[in-house]
Length: 308
Image (cartoon, rainbow, N blue to C red; front, side):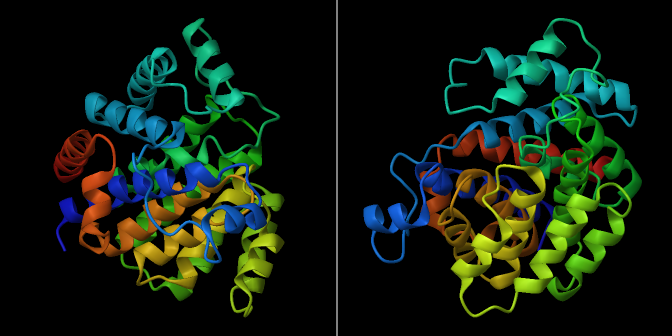
């Protein structure tokens, strides 16, 4: 599997997961089944539109490609630029999170990225957009940690949100590395040790319920994904239940209570990194909106990663 195949797996994986989860966001699982049938949503919507989760992930990717440097302030200046462009885009009409919006407003008003975020917010809006960081800095774990944290605190400054941002990026790295899924929880907790007890407790719950027979019971136990630690925990659970099947991962993630698009976006990035783009159904890749743009982002990010 080439690095480009893996990068396309990350980018298409998160976008398609996001698009699957958007119709079921805010809807209880019982309502999803009532609307879509016993197994819930089973196919990519038509049109297959993604949300602010993917839009912000692509903004991060664009910023990384443009900056192309190791200097953190240079990277964050580009992230500021692309977040502001996203904020003013006419397509920024897909239920963006209020904390993300306020953080970008602060950035545009001149507040530095270290102080623009809400220090009390641990929403998942920072964790759902870090997959490109996990790809680019796969072989530079400390740089991954540094950039994932910085990209997160410009909107979400709570320690648990910081841990979730670093953790979500690490899981993409671990998947790219081909880490045995059985070791991912241990690796994740080791990489994020000491940042947040709430985070560690949430990830510990994944280990507790991973072998439960009833997946829906496990999903309820893990939460609804509105906060960072729950969104990443739920995404990791969905991946670990079907590590060899991208479709199963994102469909399971989309058929959840709560923030289904963010859960499926994060889960899709992990699965896409682990299995590569060829594991994603071809018709889904053909139907997702702006597929040429997604391909160009993957090419640019891959070229930069190879040059580091």
